[in-house]
Image 1 (cartoon, one colour):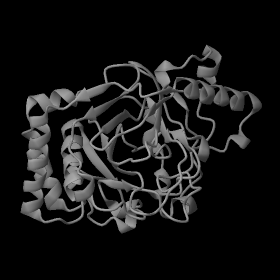
Image 2 (image 1 turned 90 degrees about the vertical axis):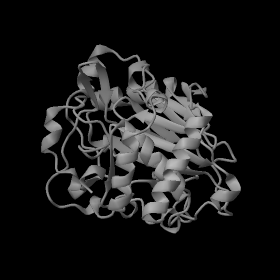
Image 3 (image 1 turned 30 degrees about the horizontal axis):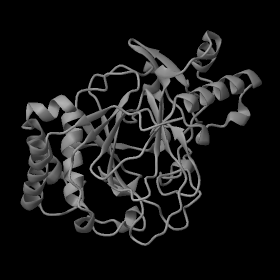
Amino acid sequence: MTTGAAPVRQLDPADAVELRGTAEKILAAVGRGTSAAPQLLARVAESADGLPPSVRRQLRPADTDDGLFVLRGLDVDDTELGPTPAGWAAAGDSGAVHDVVLLLLATAMGDPIAWEGQQGGRFVHNIVPAPGHEGEQTGAGSAVLLSPHTEDAFHPGRAHLLMLSCMRNHDRVATTAAGVRRVRLAAADVELLSRPLLPILPDDAYAGARHFDGGPPPAVPTLYRAEDGLTLRFDPAYTPLADATPAHRAAYRRLEAELARVSVAVRLAPGDVLVLDNDLVVHGRVPFQARYDGTDRWLKRASLRVPARRTRPLAEASEHGYGQAAIEAHAG
């Protein structure tokens, strides 16, 4: 694994000031309510249409096989921000202006989505360590490696793009990322992993999904050949590999090893936004020791879909998604 190799795009300081000013105007007009408020989302959509070309140019799709970039230059004042919340439910509207800035950027790139069963249906999630959840394979964990994975891999309506905006990272905790188009796999492994042989189960962040009884878990392919190259759907922590044949399990482990080989460690600083192509890139996090003293790592996360994108098998449309429903920002 290499360190800090993500391509960086630098925002013009004037654009960063304009983004914050626009977010503050939106909050002044609609109040500092939840990021799921319909009137806030409508204002964000209107304002995103008016973002200057210089900002939109920096938000163009990732243009390398890495499938990611860091947008740098937003201003985050550590004192103004307040203490890191002890869990997402305790966050309330902490850092609300940064929620709106992230929504503006996300809306300029696609259609933000939220989930009815995750973080109260908010369109911006707070990713912070939570007491009692240290060993979980979710954003609330801290003490264990967060295994590299596709975001919301269990669901056919998962995001095309993922944005992680850094509020605080005093300990320089690394986010890991690996692009499938950087790996080297034998053709036989690609062929085997392109078959729908195992399901991906919902992760523990989704209320009720693990007890869904609306149908058997659908088997899904790990790899898929889209028109422009290989894509993946990958979450080893929630894939029952014990049920696989020895050949399938060995191919999966070789893919896992290759992703580890090409992985980069990105140590986000306050004001950095990591943009990941969720069809090309798996991401994770190294372990760290949470202090729960208000100074721990704090990211904000937004998920979005890109209209008319064709990077997934058509068969996904028939999946039940374990009863989890996505909420689209433009639907109000």
